[in-house]
Length: 99
Image (cartoon, rainbow, N blue to C red; front, top):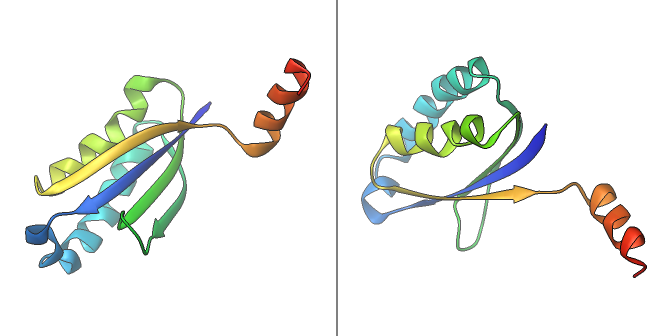
């Protein structure tokens, strides 16, 4: 399965309702896993993003369920999703290129 990371940024409006988001996220995480997406990590972040979720999905359509589910919780949430490669696999790529 491919790995993805969704970064979350709260708008000023959403920051006031963070307690509700956290409770609702737990319910959403269960629904997301029911769709065949395996959540491997959830993190609070100090910096330009507020939260990050790392997960494995069998395809892009399933991976898209994560930011959609998060955005569904509150339209004030901004998400950005990236495809990620585990470092060991990334290092193998560089070896194949002769770097």
